[in-house]
Image 1 (tube, chains in turn cyan, orange):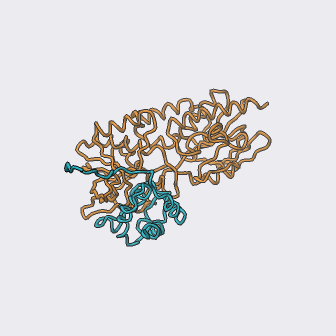
Image 2 (image 1 turned 45 degrees about the vertical axis):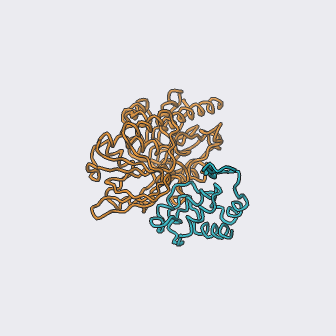
Image 3 (image 1 turned 90 degrees about the vertical axis):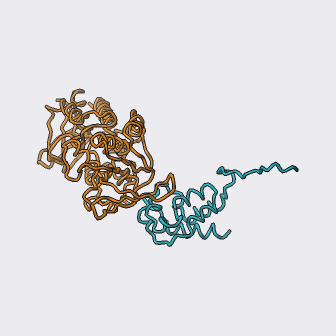
Amino acid sequence: MIDFGYSLTSSSRISLDNINQKKLKKITAVEPDFLKCMACGSCAASCSAGNFTKVNLRMVILLLNRGMEKEAIALIEGCMLCGKCTLVCPRGINTRNLIINILKIYKEV
Amino acid sequence: MNKQVLVIGGGPAGLEAAGQLENLGYKAYIVEKSDKLGGHLLKWDRLFPESISAAETLQKLLEPVGHITTFLDCTVVSVSKTGEHFSVQLSNDATLNVSAIIVSAGFSLFPAEKKEEYGYNIYNRVITSADLEDFFKTGSDSRIQNPKSVGFVHCVGSRDEKACNRQCSKVCCITAVKQACEIKEQYPDADIYCFYMDLRMYGRGYEDLYLEAQSKYGIRFIRGRVSEVAEDETGKLVIKAEDTLSSKPLKITLDLLVLMVGMIKNADNENLSSLLNTRLGDDGFFQSASPILRSTEGEIAGIFFAGASTGPKTLPESINEAKASALAIHGYLSKQK
């Protein structure tokens, strides 16, 4: 084939068709609070690691729900489990348990 | 003799209901626990979204009430029902015999000091939406000194499990937009920010006011819930939130912060509901017989509701519900001999 100097770029579009439902079911089973997030950002705003690292629990929950697992894990690994997010969450999410279980389920890949 | 109806609570819903009942030929009594009729409307300056005067609105609500027997600084002590009649003992030792009771006891404002992380009563330049409305009404508040930057925090004590109030208070989004425009009118040089989780602009004219806030007044809307407030060495406020749309933690230094306090149940709802043998919902507001077809009626025959006693409502909603409630009472009493 003649090389014209062009190549195909993989789509950056979110595909809801290819989400790992099994893992989502697993995380909701061990921590049902996973479903409660309303994306207010209080956790990310209060995060003691958030100013200097990419830690952002709100974004992790969103990305997992969109099937972007690798990107999600990258945003949680710097978490020091200080628990400030648990204090400020208006939905009362057990953030500490949620973070530990996300790492357990999604890091075993 | 005309049939008699007791109205518990002399706010807008109670006043409207009492006026309507008198029009329908009943004798209404109003019991009000404070020393004035008017409820929370007394504290408003201008009403959203059309900036109608609160004082004039209250004046119109009070007009038909002039000759209605009103008990101020007074509460219900006991209620007993015999057949279709209620015998009601009041705290001023009066006893009323009525055929129906309408609960228009309203709501309370969330005490902002409970959300300690926002610093109300700790930092001098943190005020509530009620304080700001009072400033618009009276023109004076020592905490408001020509601010150059003002923030509004939506959902303070609303949609908050930690504050034990899960409900949306309905009116704060549009109130924040209204007050943001008003403060910009008063201080044209000030930068104004609204911190929100969701903007609920559901009413007629609300979206127009939101658009005006953006395009005419240049109010900036930031999608993120404020997580904490601190004071710097100059007395200015440092606000922290996540700008969720750019996914970055955000900091801003402000001269004035306004907390949009939500609507919560009255502390004495429990007592009143046990006196009336009615039920409260999980949210502490009164439960009507059916939330759709019979929202103004209680489960016990002869008990009716109007206004925010059954949950957060806007002023026109409360007034319309008072009219509906008066009509429901008329239907109920017409069937009696």
